[in-house]
Length: 536
Image: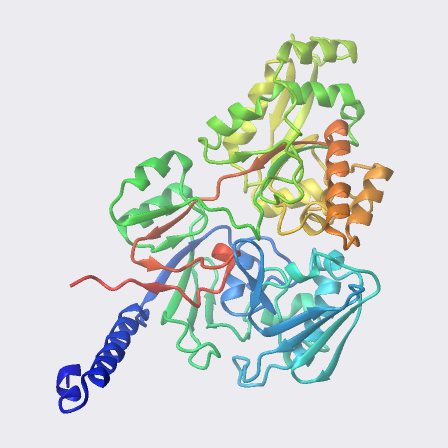
């Protein structure tokens, strides 16, 4: 039946209204994403678990949020949006956050989601999550007056807390499956039960993970996909081949940077260079300040002068990154100190400084060598980055020997054995400096065996004071100034050479739509992801 036949015999104005209504329904039908399909998604590296609860290493911070959810999600300005919490408020003194929880949400095993799960999860994150120890350090209790109200009570303000509640950072897990167990060894870390749009089906080690559509998801008609198949392809060239052939639909770990321009011209491919504001991509070079030669500021400054960070960005990053000389990168613009610039590239001045410091050419044994240093690199940085550093230091007489390891061995070498002099790291800024940056420069966060912490073993009491003050300062202007002062001191002390935001290239088939509608980007839920239907 058409709007015309339905409207026959009724007044013209009414007929127009009926026709408009049908037109609206037709447009809505076209706009509504179609359900169905299997997404073939390439992820690197292979994670040790799926839920980012006890570790965030590897791909679990990407895979987990498809299954488990957080209280909130965020837009690209990091403004909070409802997820498991539908409303929230903060007390004037900053010591209480009250969350109204979504009703009717079910765990994948059929149990009801309640405030008890929230209380258990927050207190568990405080104990076992690598950053949760800091994020939730001021949490003294989580009150649950009813099944749909959770009140986080703090001993001191935590101005970053409301931004820390995404699934990728603070997943809410089922109390009834975790309580009374060894959290770190729980089977549900690798075979999770969540509230999210996809249900865990299987993990075949060395091959794939399968997630299936949650038919009881609270946000109907989402999700639109029937299935997500996660495959682990470690080689960037192999990922590129799979994407180009159509064997893969999406790769969040990207392709060789040398292929980006060619991929941009492929008719069936979208290249996405957006950087997640929630992740806050950032890379850096850390000095091991327990190495005697590197305890001398003039030696660290000489090395900084020998590395042309702008040339690094152009050659290693192919010009796709965003260089920044400050430990708080440009992605956190409200706290970033744009006045801080790289130490001027000046190899001659570097050589003069090394001479004055007592490291003359030939002092390292070999002809023309001043000293020898061990160089590590996190596999999240390319080998080409380490080669660039080695060549730069070689020009001023430093023999930089690169040691290459897989990810797990690297973490052990850098943070447990501390068997390095310089390491190229990839410690993201994340969504707030207290969470992403403080861990790197706070002396109290140096602990042998603690991954992604104070790798340099940097100690400065004034920096500690500034970081600790910023962590509890609720006045935004004062907090910004504390972080500005912190950046200035770190830049003078040179425990690191900051490189800036490394390029993060996501490649998707053009038919893949809405895979990153939130600020978590690829670490979001995929609830909105759908395949664009072929045009008739």
